[in-house]
Amino acid sequence: MLRIRYSREGNTTTADVEPVMVASTNGHRYLIGWRRLRNDMRWLPVSCIERASATRVACSGYDVDEIGIPSVTERPVNN
Image (cartoon, rainbow, N blue to C red; front, top):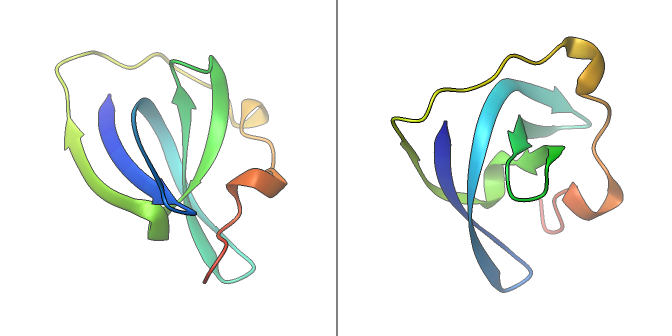
């Protein structure tokens, strides 16, 4: 699992994310992963990630069908 710190619109958040893949769409790159606190798959803009570190917690397995598409709130705002 990764512990990431990311900043969007002036808000900084730390989150534990189980990485699934990195994707690129419409000129933006995303870390797609399971966000444990939200219990949901998230598309996190790579441009918003300030710091990432590996933890010792094992990740679960996820299918490609669970990835979905980025929501409006997860799209980059200034890129």
